[in-house]
Image (cartoon, rainbow, N blue to C red; front, side, top):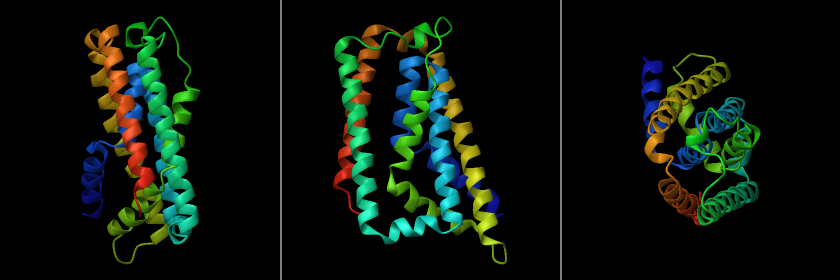
Length: 207
C-alpha cells in the first residue's frame, strides 16, 4: 500500500513542471531524443544521489548548514541563468546547427546534456530538502529505514525515467513542426526566459 501511494506521488511530482523538465525539453528540442535522454539520465543520477544521501542522513547535513545551503542555492541559480542566457544567444544566432530535423543524420554529443542534467540537479539544494522530506513519509512502521529509503529512491528514478521518456518521445514525434527554424528559435527564447526565471527565483528564495 505504501509503495502504490509512493508511485502515485512520484508520478505527480514528475508531471509538475520545473527545472528538470525545462532542461530536458531544451536538450530534446536542440538535438533530439538522444540528447534529451542523456539529460534525463544526468538528472536521474542526481535524484538517485540525493535519495541515497537522504537514506543515510547525509542530506541532513546540508539542511543543517545555512552556509552550505546558500552556496549551493547561488551556484544552482548561476547555472540556470547561464544556461538561459545561452539559449537566448542561440535563438539570436538562429538556433543550433543540429536540431530535431537533423536527428538520424548527426550524432550530437551526450556528455554535455548528461552533465547539464546532473549539474542542475546536484546544484539544487531544494532537491536535497525535498528528498529528505518526501521519501520518509512512505516508510512503513517496522521497516529498515536506510534500505527502504534507498529502494524508494530507485523507484523514484524509475518513475521519472518512464515519464520523461514519454515526454521526450512526444516532443520528438512533433519534430515536423518543432524542427522549423522559426519555431525552434521561439522555443529557444522561451526556454531561455524560463531558465533565467527559475534561476532568479532560486537565488532569491529562502528555505
